[in-house]
Length: 147
Image 1 (tube, rainbow, N blue to C red):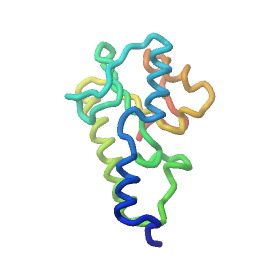
Image 2 (spheres, rainbow, N blue to C red):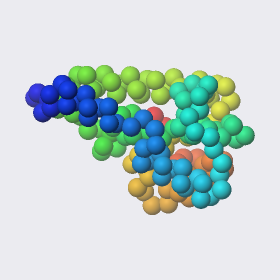
Image 3 (tube, rainbow, N blue to C red):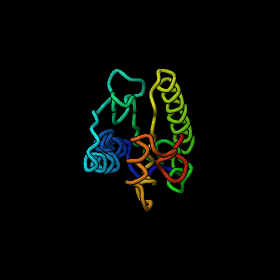
């Protein structure tokens, strides 16, 4: 199946995909701020540039889109029909990079939390997130919090 957009239209669509200040990221930030948990944005200088960093807690938080990072939920398992080879390779590279980043941070003594887009929609997500940030729980997102 060929793409329904011209190359110029596809390029415009892809440019519109945000890398920061996404709806899931803003939701996580609102939850943390409401609970009085401080954080910094961007994580520059750390492997993988985490979305949120809490230096005092040595905690890095990544807010991942299920499709882009190949999560094992319905949205993450969806395979595009157009240019399927490209997309499967792209997601595989993202997953490999995520694993390398997590390993590098953990070897430097950082705790890493991965929040999945689909996990935001589950009951009790905010409470689980706060507990995980405070070191009182084992997993944040449902299903699995590891990538």
